[in-house]
Each structure stands twice: as structure tokens, then as C-alpha cells.
Length: 490
Image (cartoon, rainbow, N blue to C red; front, side):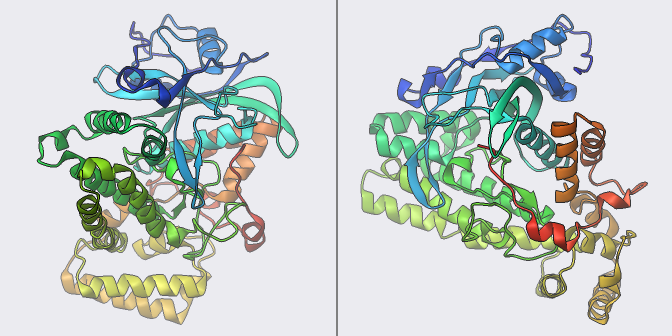
């Protein structure tokens, strides 16, 4: 059921800068399909307030009709965006095949956020698909995106999931649903690849100018704004993926069309969180070669950024050779920037602000131990901090005790208190795969929302160390993990 809004007359304030600034080739008008029996499954009142959508004259029926696609909100101009992308390394034309952008909400703080209906029906980019979403898949995106927000990681957010009352055929017939996704924008590397491969140079110039003005206006004051734009995107994406490493997140499908210009996580189909530490961990059912495994994500990010650099070459310099040299020089900074940021993050995870050789050697020794002993990634850092962990037998082994003594010695020698630093970067709770599946199955297939609501509540405050619920921090058993796979939902 919809939650109550604060007493306010603020409401829809949709803008359409994407259509106003870019040529028509970048989008296609697309009306959401009507659905027979829409019902509100979950609604994010806190996010609605942030967006300025807290008008007390809006009824639950209004929200259901707007967020199911049965009616358009005031001043909506629905479109499907065009883009291309490298999917598992292969370039193809894509576009919004089951997502429709209603517009960009201008908030009371003057921020701009895309409001998009996901699963709202076919568009010209659907490529034979039905354009629909299942209730389970849409609830999964709602749950994981809100969990990422709770973890303090840049992400799309979810305003609502509306049940459609119709059957959607996947492995079997499931109930359909529409998710309302909120993002700072849906500009992606694939948008630039589309412009470079299929549009005139003038369109690429307009796209780049639009992206810069929307997300990186500070580079306009520099001597070479396009080069600085590439650097800024690279920096934001590095910080994002380092954050993924911090919490053990595996995106699962790091195609260039899922790598955003603004540096936020989105598309939560085949994603999952790693339990036992292993760089080779992969959950995506179709990633048979482990291209997007946990440990491969930095390298894939660099590869994706090279695709962006390739698309920007004509704008970096009119001389192609010079442009390539400039792009290479920028991309050559990636490894050092990423390693520096990752080392700073890993040092904080064991309580140090310093990244000197002694600290980094200690944390790398810990990672090797975790891998060899199949130790839980999240719980290892909690145990080091002093949090009581269920089934902690692995930490009673002599090899860990030896490492732990070295850590304590270094802490004492430097006279630091590691707890505050560790508490800020090490979550107590992550979306454990077994708990996520249980919550989604109960909600989607039994209409029992107790487990979903409980898990959502826990994941919205993931760093708490008070009244820890041990069942939510336990690793899934090995039999579950061995057979667990994720899917894109299409």
C-alpha cells in the first residue's frame, strides 16, 4: 500500500532536456502499454519526498495509474532512448527495449532525475521481446538498488513496483510488474558508441556537450573539456567499482550499455554479493566464461572506458593520431588510480588510514588467507573489528590467529583505534543471496510480504552494530551457493 505523504502541494515537475538538446535519432516516442489490474506492491515515500512528489492531493489511485503506465503524469513526454553497446565484448545496436522515460523530475533542490518505467511494454528497440517485467525481477531491482543506497554507493533508486495483473512468460508464466527507476540520467558509454558509429559528428558533439553540462559542467572551464570529461568519467567509475569491491558486489553484466556516464550503479538483473572471498566468483547464468567475475571488474571497466575514449576521438583532437595518443595517455593512468583507490579502501577495512607498504602487505596477506580458507568476505572484517559472528570456526585456525596477532601488533605500535574507521566501511549486512531469494519468492509467488519488508528494513541500515540479527549475517550453505545463479529477467 502507498505510504502517506507530507502535507505539501509540490508535485510533478517534469523537464525534457534530453529531447530538447539532442537530435531525434537519440530517442523514439513510446507510450507505455496499459495493464488490466494494477496494484501497488511497494512504494518509496522517502524517495518521493526527495523528488518533490509529495503532493497530498495525489491519491493511491493516481500513483497506481501513473506508475503502471495506464496514465501519463502531468507534462510527461514518454520516450525510449537509443544507444548501442558491447555486450560480452560484441558490439550491437540496442536501445530501451522494455523501459520508457517519462521525463526528468526537477526537485525542490533544483536537481534533475530521470523517471523511467521499466517493464512498461514494447518499444521500437524491443527486438522481439515483450517489453515486460516480472514481479520477482522488479522486486529484486527495488530491493538491491535500495540496499546499495543504504551502503552509500552511487546507484539508481526505485520509487515503486506496481503489479500489473497480467501473466508474463519467462521459464514459466509469472505475474507482471512495472518498476519506476530514478537516476541522475541514463546516459551511458553505449550512448556515445551509438553516436560515434551511427550518427554524424555534429550529433556526437551535441551529445558530449549535453553530458558535460548535465554531469560535469566544471570541465567547460578547462582548456580541453572533452579530455577532462573522459578523465572525470574514469575517476567516477573507478570510485564506483572500488566501492563494489568494498562490499563484495558483483554487477554480473558490465556491458558498455550498463556503464553510466554519471558513475552510478544500475541494472540489477544478474547481480549478486559475494559470500566466500574468491576473485573468480561469478553468478550470472549466461556468463559462462566468467568475463564479469568479481576480480575481473576492474579490467572490464578499463576496457569499457577505452570504448568511450574511442567514441570521443574525433572530439579530443581533429588529428586522429594525436587524439589516440591523448586518449592512451589518459587511460594509462587507470591502473595507478584504481590501485591507489583500492588500497586506500582495503586499508580502511582493517582500520588504517595509511597505505604504506606494511599495511598493504598485511591486507593482501589477509585476502590470500580468505581465499585459501573460503572465509566469508563481509564477516571476516566484522570479526577483526570484534563483532560476534555465527559459525566462526574458520577464525579459530592457527593461520588466522597468526595474522590477527600481526594486525594487533601493528595497531598497537601505531596507537590507533581501528573501530570507527572499520565501522564506516564494513557493512554488517549485505543482501545475502539466500535471504534475497527467500524474500522475493515469498512476495512474488505466495503474496507474503513479511520477509521482503523485514529484509528491506535491515538493508536500509546496513552499518548498524546494535542488536545484530545473526541469521542475516550468516553465509548461505555451500549447497545453496554451488547451485545459485542469477538472470537478467528478460
